Image (cartoon, rainbow, N blue to C red; front, side, top):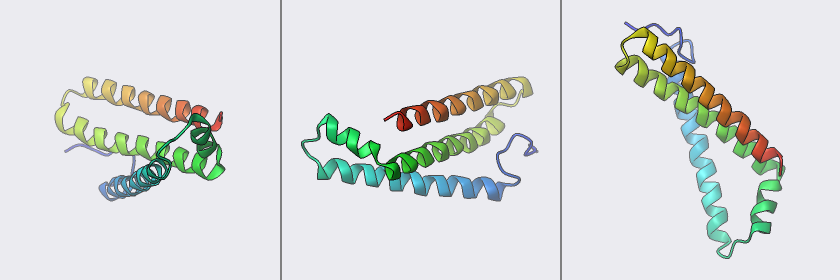
Amino acid sequence: MVTTVTSLGRSGLHDWFIQRLSAVVMTAFTVYLCWFLVSNPELQYQQWLAFFSQPVVKVFATLTLILMSLHIWVGMWIVSTDYLKPLGIRMVFQAALIIYCLIVIFWGIQIFWSV
């Protein structure tokens, strides 16, 4: 049996909840972004910039990015514990995944909040 030492939550229920919450937020952001794109068929750079300059959009995009990274972490942690049996390989994979998720979060925050 695989222990939850490297799991994000304390139990499978916490991981399940993170997966569902992040999926709902990512879906809501996608719908919101699609609505903006459909309602602005001749979108210009200035409109796009104005859209992402709004504090509500910045916060929503940042929250979505953070929850997307948590979603990736939980999903890939489950996959790695199921299919990467050698402990060394699994730990290297999970460490690389953590670094990747942190880079995505910090880079995304830098992009969203620099506008």
